[in-house]
Image (cartoon, rainbow, N blue to C red; front, side, top):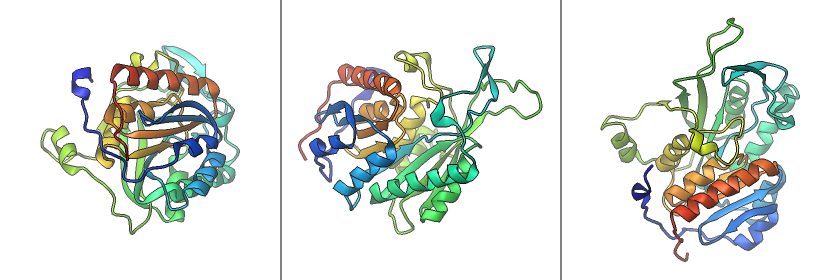
Amino acid sequence: MPVAARKRKLAAPEQSFDAGVLATVGKPALHDECAGMFLYEADCLAALDRIIDLHPSGIFDAIFADPPYFLSNGGITCQNGRMVKVDKGGWDKSRGAEVNHEFNLEWLRRCQRALKPNGTIWISGTQHVIFSVGFALQQRGFKILNAITWEKPNPPPNLSCRYFTHSTETVLWAARDAKSRHTFHYAPMRAANGGRQMKSVWRMLAPAKAEKRHGKHPTQKPLALLERCLLASTNPGDLVLDPFSGSGTTAVACARLGRRCVGIEMDAVFLEAARKRVMDEIDEIDFRFPPA
């Protein structure tokens, strides 16, 4: 998006929070109250427990979560025309369906408590995890609003030739509970779709090379995907959480759109890439939130 097109209306946050105290949730990698950007090195479960202790009535307007897919178990894939092992790291290894599902229940339980009453959560995943996440959402009493299919125009080929080529990921969108009056900006989404109702199948390219200039995350999402989710479900000045921050795409999208963001990531290498990306965005577009 051209810099000239990134002008945005900033709104004073409806609910202020003690950013200084919030920094105790983990080791701060980026703590800029004026820009509304907060990145921490921490385990998301422990960090969310701390946030809930500090703000028991809920603090976040929206959450975008890209949890472990649990697919690093000796498989292979194609990357840049070469056969490589699917080994994203210890955090992505499956510990069995029951243990994986329990983990999904636990982080979702905390996210539900950290959301404001009318807040919503977006969760991305492949077939390896998304069915567990969907069931966990139902078990916890979330209200599932949509199942978005992200279609990738140019996916890696299936090397075994024994399955259809995997060319989609699912993004679930859910409200905190059945009573939530969730935000949905229908008109802008319709306008972005040429004046017609936007459907739940979104065709988007994988992250561009420029989005990986500070390092590559194995499950990095395209900036366009995050921007659409945030434009649809949040307002300027809203506070967004990413409990599995990775390389910081959610935070970059928030910086572009005038939202505030708390990102939590346990891998210091990915966190440093996120910090650099967010700082680039803040430096390129100078903005400051008005006082609450």
